[in-house]
Structures are given as C-alpha cells and as structure tokens.
Length: 244
Image (cartoon, rainbow, N blue to C red; front, top):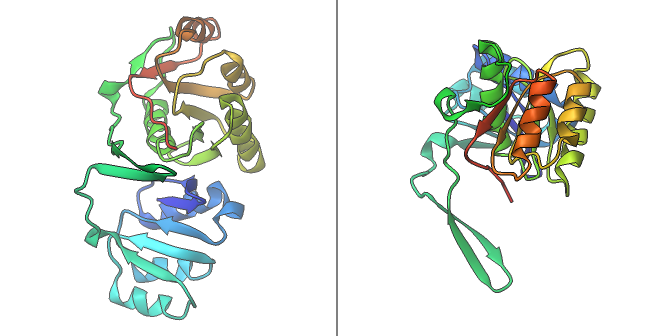
C-alpha cells in the first residue's frame, strides 16, 4: 500500500489485511500523507472506506471498490476514485518529453527475489531481515533518485528522495526515521551503489541492521571491506533502479 506525494511514495506498507497495511503506511509519514494519493492492491470494502473518509486525500486507487464503498466516498467533495484493474499496463515502453523531442525507453520491470541478491559481507541477515531488504528495494525503485529507503517489518520508516547526493538522501531518510521511529531497528535499500563509505558509516551509527545496494562502483571493495569489519550484512543486486 502506497501514499504518493509529488511523484514519490511517502509511506508504504504490507501486512496481513489491507486495513492494517493502510494504517502502517499512514503512520510511516502522516504529515506528508495530507492531500496525497493512496494506492491499494486489494479491493476497498465498506469498513476501510469509513476509515479512509476521515482523512484528506485527493485520489484513491484500488483494483475495485465495493458498491457501498462508493456511496460512502460520494460525500467527499472532489475525491477521485480510480479502478486500477481497468488500466491497460501491457505497454512496456515509457516516454518523457524534452525541449527537442521525446525520449522513449523500456519500463523498469526488474523484479527482485532472494535468488537475485548476493551476500558480499561476512555476516548474513536472518529471514525476516532479508524480507525487509527485499521490501525496501521494491519500494526504492519508485522513489526519485538519489533514493534511500529504510524499512522495518515491511513498513517504510524513512525515505530520502531526489537529492543531489546519496549522502544527503541518507540523511533525509534518517531524519524521517527519527521523527517517527527512533526506537526501531531498520534495514536500508539504495537505488544505486554507495560510492563511499560515509553513507554506511552514518547508517551504522544509527543501528542499521542490514543494507542492500546495486554493485558497480569502483569502490565496491571498500564498501564490502567496511561491512565485513563492522559485521554489517551487505547484499548486492546487479540492477540499478534509478528513477528520474
């Protein structure tokens, strides 16, 4: 479940029910959620509609809505409901306009799994921590670069987006984390490689449990050595997931 604001997710969560997911996603950054877009991957029922109605959102997107849910939402002035199941997603091309024309490229449909990540440090993460790493990396591909996502139990606890340096994105994500979740452990996902150890030093200082990042930097060995020396589980993926 996502909250979007200015083309970035401000809160994302997954849980056993769609209502629990909504609550966790909202709590991830309730301040930024105001006036945002809410996206679900499950049908919206009556009970959830009453809960959603309490908040100010511009758009709610879901595969479908129960009939009585639509009636409940009708009392919300200017609220837009979108059935995502009717949206055609077969086109694997995307485009961006520029001054001199249009740029076409393939959509980033890279899917991360346990088989597509590699432990490169000495210490491995437990099952739940790896699950959080996979969750965080799935989210980070939807965040504008440079992107950093911190997560705990399939809930984002800090997102750093669109900064000029990866270090600034890391600091921004940690700022959000300290605002809402200062006592929780977390994992970190980066949309591209860490070029220097300064990011990981900062994450370690704030008790990060594990890190996932794409490979490809000339300093990869320095990053790996730092993780080994400090007993930080570090996983590499082969794909960068920049979003511009």
